[in-house]
Amino acid sequence: MLIVPLMLLNLTAAALAADTRVGQVVVHDPWARASLGAMRTSAAYMTIEVTGDRADRLIAAASPIAEHAQLHAEVMEQGIAKMRPVAAVEIAPGTPTVLAPGGLHLMLTGLRNKLVEGQTMPLELTFENAGKVELEVPIRGMAGASDHGMDHGGHGQGQPGKMMTN
Image (tube, rainbow, N blue to C red; front, side, top):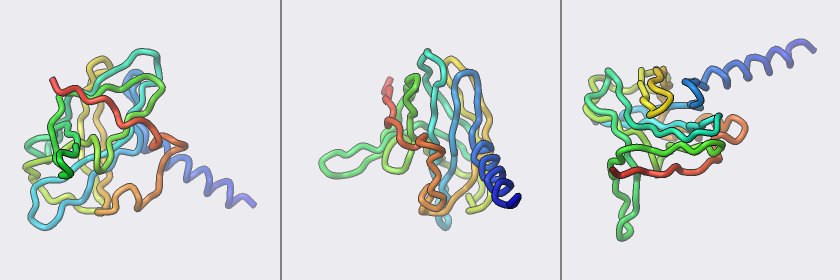
């Protein structure tokens, strides 16, 4: 009988370990995609929430394992998916903003090392109001989030976020 509660406690601890807070901003379930072969690019994804009543903006990202970590959006132009840099991502209070494949994401270019599934990578996010937060981001395979099916009680169900192009 004691085994089931302990298993649930371990699952809860694992889920909470994926959440990182800075000020009123909470980053849920960050992950990066494993790099393919000799490619020197990848992407990082997560869900971001503001728990207070004041909006914030994700304005920058950096990692020592990449030359650049840029905010990007995937947009459809004449039936063709294209990536475009964005200056910032608005995070509205009470509405999770999702950075996910096929939408907003952090593009990692000039990788110094191959991103290997099962390992982690350091990532620093800068928010306009909350400041900087350092994350240790798990690296997942090509299927990414579907490998784990995590939504942390609906955090992955939010809005795609408002892009700021300038």
